[in-house]
Image 1 (cartoon, rainbow over the protein chains, first blue to last red):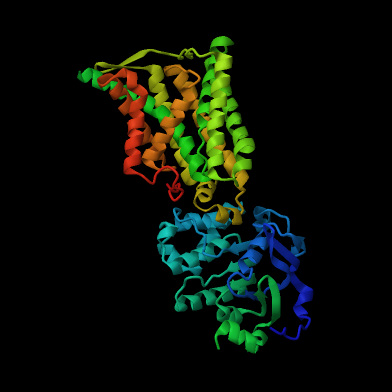
Image 2 (cartoon, rainbow over the protein chains, first blue to last red; image 1 turned 90 degrees about the vertical axis):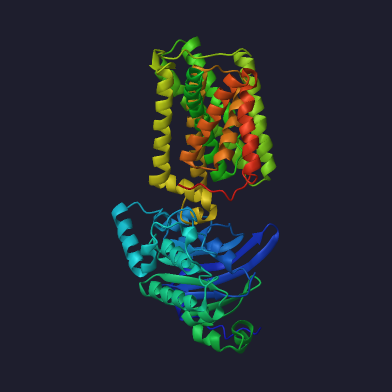
Length: 249
Length: 291
């Protein structure tokens, strides 16, 4: 694949999530080969790529779930690489993980409380729960129901809500469209837009390239552990090879 | 005849509470960490032997001796978690299994070296008989039952309503998600071991006070605890209370009406039956802590 004109993105200067030359090894096998990603504050940045390209690994590495073997991760001037997930969470980063990862035998309400684990302000946590309920009215009726008994769509809403409970300034979203009916995929897209509209920076990982390209201000294409292409959403969408490889045009 | 039944039911309830105490720690530890903590029996006898040493050998007052024994055995439980199990967590399950059994035997032998093979007991604080119809219960035994219930009720509240309890359950249900949300897994593991070991310590003190302790008591008790755990499923506090009572009742009734010689086997009969009817019980991690 020929790279697009690798113009210097004007946002790079004010970028707040700055991943530089990040490598990651599973045992002895390197699966991320020095990738660099910048996500601009208040924007949606998408990372697309096929299965096994290293998208989820990238997200987990940012969150501190997997120690990287090279490079640095910086968020808002703070170095995240080498930190524990609990410390990364305290820096305002939240991960809405692939496959939702809810606590199946805890109620909707308890799942939300767990989302606010790093916060200490009890009253404000209650307020956040109320505002989350306003965003996702369907969760209100289900508040005392076990998360494992929710429908797929409701579970995704809960996973997103739980991540929002920490009031993150950077939201990492890993495959939010996973296993959802097309109509719900659209709804999730709208939700991501509104989260972003409230000022949260979003890094979105998707196999559903159409959704990722539609939402994103800036897009990175990851192939077998390397960034092979990057550019503004519209620019990448217009690329013929991207259309063939990811959009099935 | 009916007097004897009533008496044995009362005895069964009292000893059943002890099985509940030990099973509770086991099921929390297994449910959250997947560790088959056989050395939990060692924690029980360490508390019992220390309680004996403090009260009978050193002649200290009962209450501070009990508290100190429980603190000491809790520290032992925490050390086992930190230095024996934690380094093994990434290794195959069988390693932990063998390690746990090994620690049980080591403590069993050490206890025999230090305290000898003969049964020892702590003199109970007050042994005023209370008559319930034709049957008899001592004040001490009544206190044991009441303390057990209070402790278990407290634990239930802790697990259900506090942030700490929620984080323990969260870790049992999805470790990685708990980690993402900021739960410190090592700290939580230590807490689970701490709580479980303190309950085991209480069990050891009660056991040594009401019955008698020998070095092999740890193994016998921990197996009964596991039997209760399998019988009722993981981390189910009300269920564990019921399971402990069933175990206690089966034993005391069996000992009276079948044969005293097989007292310890009746519980295992329950275990075998439980395995037959719940074949996916023991090492099935799908069972999760829920309240």
